Image (cartoon, rainbow, N blue to C red; front, side, top):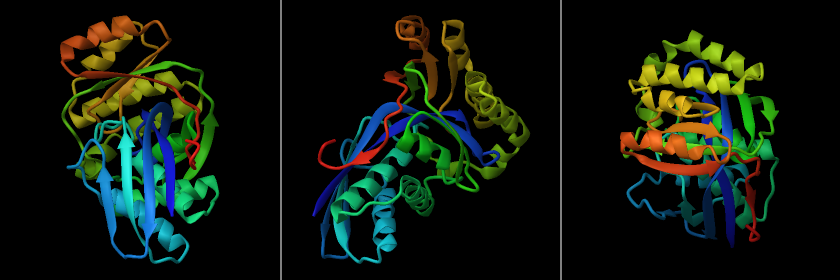
Length: 286
């Protein structure tokens, strides 16, 4: 029995780490997972393109589905992705969503969308790849569009379909894993983060992204110059992706070149994506 699933990347509008309240925006970067079941207990994992990456998240994503249906099966998991790992671009949320979907597909089972997202969040917590459960990121990865959430209660407070826009990512080689970030550090800016969150809830999404980006860059010790450079060169908004180190800039199609030129001095890879309202899915017709 074999199944496949796909989920998408996202970028941060408001980081949920300080307050438990967050907002994320879906983009068209992707992760595809293939799961093949067997009658053994073991789980094998192959992360194509990054064989040195931890396999715990993939295993936990498989296990939560088995537990949900009271099954004891083993399986082999393979993933492919164009989302850089541990840069704040929601690679973990996309992976857990895709693997949960692929496992359901292999079993021939269906669940409600929100339960699928929550299973992925549970897997992420067990694998210790997140501090908050990253429900905002998981929701944006699964549903697309803008998802504004209460991560503590795992509730979507507002879901907004976003117009097609270009999203540029400045992606340094450095990696930063959420489990390695001290909670006291981020909680110190809770009140500021809540201001950014209220901006997002009030419909001032791009202002929220900029404010969050500057707050979190200061908190994590990043130079805010890439954010400021993007804004100077015509971006609609710009901000820090998760806990970094990647930075994103949102602009209209055709306005990318000045931002790309301005970012070249930072010496990091630049990835071009689009906002996305596509929903994660399973099945052979991917």
